[in-house]
Amino acid sequence: MSERFRPKFDSQGLLAAIVVDHDSGDVLMLAFMDDQALAATRETGFAHFHSRSRGRLWKKGETSGNVLTVREILVDCDQDALILRCDPAGPVCHTGADDCFFRKLEGEHLVPLS
Amino acid sequence: MSERFRPKFDSQGLLAAIVVDHDSGDVLMLAFMDDQALAATRETGFAHFHSRSRGRLWKKGETSGNVLTVREILVDCDQDALILRCDPAGPVCHTGADDCFFRKLEGEHLVPLS
Image 1 (cartoon, rainbow over the protein chains, first blue to last red):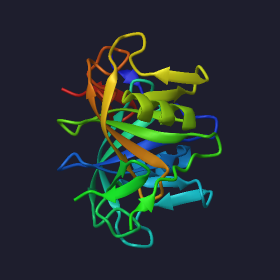
Image 2 (image 1 turned 45 degrees about the vertical axis):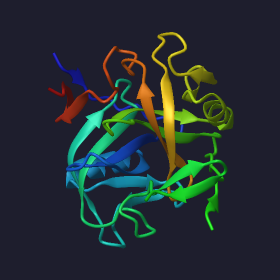
Image 3 (image 1 turned 135 degrees about the vertical axis):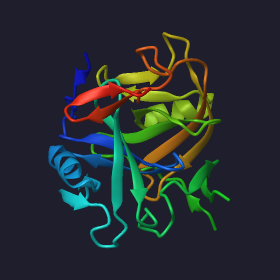
Image 4 (image 1 turned 90 degrees about the vertical axis):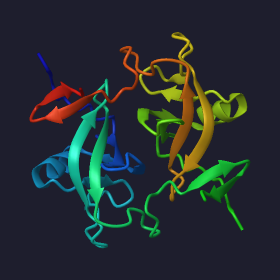
C-alpha cells in the first residue's frame, strides 16, 4: 500500500522545495513553502512559495510573468523536502539568469559558470 | 570583479544545501548547513550538515560509510542556498535508496517512481 502524503513542516511552518526543469533535470531555484503555498500550488498547478523576506504567499512570476507550471511533485524520504518538476515560462532568477545557481565557489569568491 | 562569498544563514543559523550527483546531475538529497558544517565541508572535502533533529554536526556517511565527496559548490543569487556537486560513495538515502526523492505525489498518496 502506498504511504499517505503528510508533509512535515519545520518549526517555522516551512519546508524546502527544489525547482527542477522538467525537461533538462537542471536545478533552477530553491524556495520555501508553508501549507498555504503548497495548497495554492496543488490547486492552481503554478508554483507558489512563502516569501521569508516579505512574510507572505508568493506566486512565482506574479510580477515578471515567469511562472512555473508544475508537472510533477516528488517527496523525499522524511516528507520534509519536495522537488517540483516544472516547465518554466522564462528565466527563473530575479537577476534575469535562466536559473539561480549561476556561480561556483572558488576560494572566497563566486565565479560565473561558463 | 568577482563577488565575495558571504553565505546568508537564516534566523536559525542555517542554509539549505542541495546535493546533486556530479556525473548525472540528479538531485540526491537536501539538508541544512550551519557555519560549522560549511567550514567542515570545505576543509575536508566531504559533505557535512547540521542535523536539525539531533542538533549537532553530522558528517554524511559517518555511520553508513556512504560519504559524499564534494567536487564543486554552486551558490545561488542570494547566497542563501547551495548546490553541492558530489560523488556519492554509495546509496545516499537512509532507507537504502540511491537518493531520497524516490516517490511522487499522486492525489494524497506517495507512489514509487518506476
